[in-house]
Image (cartoon, rainbow, N blue to C red):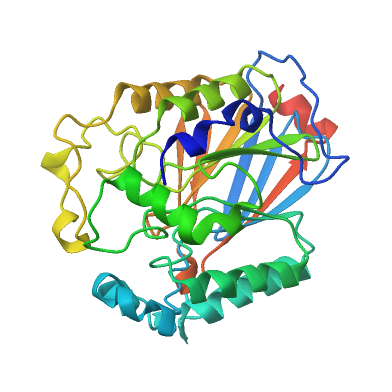
Length: 339
């Protein structure tokens, strides 16, 4: 698919559409940084802010790595073979019992239904490769919950290993051929969802980079004054986080690309990140209305604080990991402590 087909309606995508008719957030025109408190206990996240008016419960899923396939996938086995075997059996992060991606995903959706989550966020690598069988299975399971969901792609969701093309062109191709239904009519690379006064921005950084349209999209919402939560697959770079692939990492380049041969993909560029990607990193952490960032990719839970902004990363769902995120209005006694 040609890239221009993604962006010909960018102005419409910038507006964002709420998940429900009464969920639309109005701008607070608030240029003062939101006061945020975050408490994390294993997979439970309690997120308080002075701009949260109603409780919101989010079940956050990353890195399920489903490998379901059927006869339609036979022509692609040259490209899917390694990842089809990567997560056949896993160890549950909490019980330490044997599990697998299908079981872990179903258990997480059952939990979301049990707690009556407001939204399920799926931030990439839900699939190990873009199998039609796996995508159809996930769509059916999500529909059965009756819970609204937000999806963005991870680097494996659209990647058939060894297939020729740039990261950007392959992403475009397999979004159009396979992943498109998961976006529910939204722009695949950038979309806004309004839930009880909080705007969730889903931005695809699964190529490790951000393009000009995505930067403009983020800047417009950052200027709105509406409280924002950013959903991405690859975490933003943070000093002290010992990975070389964080989005905006000044050390990200061909010289630090250790896995291109294993993953049979183009090597990262010798010149490193584009200036657009670096500007995105800077603007994210300068956005006064950004409450926090939720990500995945690294298969390990963590929290980083960058300029007072919390970035919370989920453990891999292939091993049963998820985040139970509770965004909660701050009570008066706690407001007096921090405001």
